[in-house]
Length: 528
Image 1 (cartoon, rainbow, N blue to C red):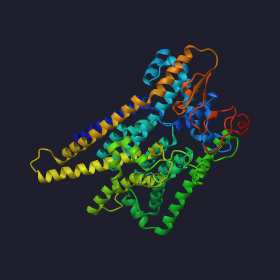
Image 2: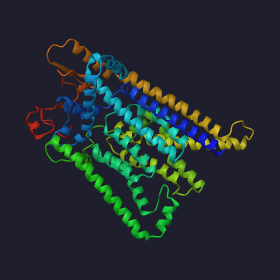
Image 3: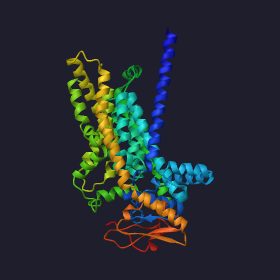
Image 4: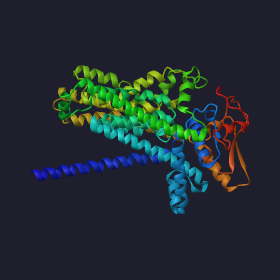
């Protein structure tokens, strides 16, 4: 009997592993397949990130004032890894046989006849999307292990189907990769690995050139300190509790806190040293763009020169990108708080603590970001997974409550509580998924023309090549999808339009070093 039970258990475990692997493959495949259908919705992504990467790879590209040596607001540490990925794909494509190259091109929505650079661009975007999928799966697995498999599944459905994640996943923006780091950090922390969670937070804050994201990891640090002090814990074994009772709690707690702080400081110093070493190579001087951009945006009106919008801008964007998931996600904390009070749930309950660690950063972020006059859609990217988690928790709790009510007042119902809960949850999620998919389809149908047009232009230029080509753009300069869409003998130029602000200039051979200032035709300024 025991042997048969063990055999059945092993069979069930193998089945679960196979199912989990199938889901993982499906999510990654979806993200890769959809990556190059998503339009580039922010010109900052092109001019502040894709163009400098193109310069690192091919020696040409458009430079914004943030990369000028006198300002140095953008770190090259965020660019170098992507440039290395692009180079790796370049080497791979150079040895692939033509049939495989054609198949790869069709998979990534790019014909090989338009050249290798556009294909590299699509491959890098697909890679970024695949990395996002792995982060989503990581958080999904952690939620499944520490909170509930059903909540984890609803989170994954909401996240994978949402229009917001559809265009945030392949986006080459610090906010997208901060979101990815936060998901991995949160997954590590609710599993009890505070050291990994803190390191991932440090990478996001120091390595991506977006120091404001530190706000998202405040709860990460506070929880780790409280845990080191012995006040809280996800789980503590009875052996550990007995061992700690026999020691001086005050000295042990202080030692643990000091150890945590020293380890964090050491990790921060190592990461910052690597970042500054990379920036020293590209700026030709010791500089900290992370510090520079923080000072620029906090000294007063630095970030208020453009993009000034009312609070309704964020409300509309959140609802467009996550529809009813955003509403459910926002009310998650009050719903869980009421349930905790009604059930007299203790605050140190491991499940409750995990839920708070996943939700609190969203409210802190909104409290700081929402009142700022300068608003951009990408500033909301980091809270998309938190909203999806919150929505999954609310749907799960409401479905359970409703099914229990039905069972209590309709005892003759043929459905048990679990089946009823699943039915209610599916009924709630179906319209959410349909609206999300419709929004994503609308984005592809109505906003992907620039990528298609420049792909055709590249194909045309490669067919009728006749010396150097200058591609001129006017008032719609912000729709340019990057120099990856131009052949090597073509360059971008701006013609006079109604736009009166500061436009990018071509990188000189010196990049962001001081020598570039004497070669550029116009002088950069920090007043737009």
